[in-house]
Every structure is written in C-alpha cells, then in structure tokens.
Amino acid sequence: MKVERQEDVENVPADELLLGASTWNPKESSLKYAWPDKNGKRARGGEVPITAVPQAVLFAGREGYLTREAMARIIKGLTDVLAG
Image 1 (tube, rainbow, N blue to C red):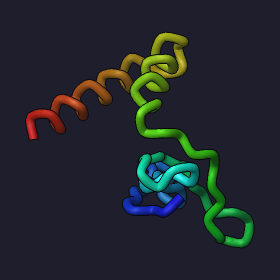
Image 2: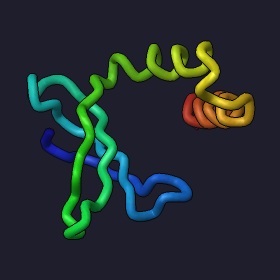
Image 3: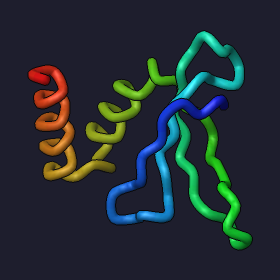
C-alpha cells in the first residue's frame, strides 16, 4: 500500500488507520490498520478495499459486533461529512 493519509486510532494512540493506493491495483483505494510491533516498527494488518468498507460496517452492525452507541457515532459522523 502506498500510504496517502493516516490518522491515530481513538483511545489507542500508538495505532493508526492508513488510507492510500492499494497493493493489488494502484488505481484502487484501500484501508489498513497499523500498530507498533515489539521493536517499535509499524506492523500492518491486511488491506480492505474502500469499496468494501460500507458493507463491512453494516455486516458488523447486523451481527452485533458494534454497539448502538458506535452505530450512532457512525451515523452522526457521516451526517456531518455530508453536511460539510
């Protein structure tokens, strides 16, 4: 992944969310979760295509992996972005 943007994870300041060009196709965007390994270097999880993120969030919500509070924060955040 070619990282284009990054943001600290809320309540886990050493971890990051990374956005950028995907490994499999530089014209596609992807999301990664990164954390410091035992040597302080950035370890990364697997990439998720940005196009799969809405489905992933809905899937997690339907299956009870997100609290009602977390889903409300998502709705408010998306509403703020759309109003932006």
